[in-house]
Amino acid sequence: MAESTITQHPRAGWEKPEQLDLSGAEWRSSSRGMGDVEIAFVEGFIAMRNGGRPESPSLIFTPAEWGAFVLGAREGEFDLT
Image (tube, rainbow, N blue to C red):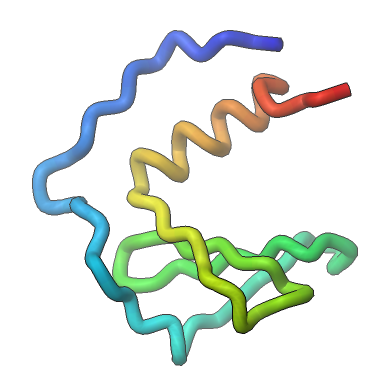
């Protein structure tokens, strides 16, 4: 597995809110529509949910957290095979 060399520091003003209104969120799935993971961009944050169970809780990411996740995925950090 690749090891990330980037250190993420929280940005001032980008603390995650206790509640984020997702009622009007425009959820997107993969371009092929085959996955159950959906994301939405809401008020400068990124929400992720299980599209097969949209009523279940969503994960909320700051822009820095999302960037670290995407970078890790691109580098194969989460490849479990």
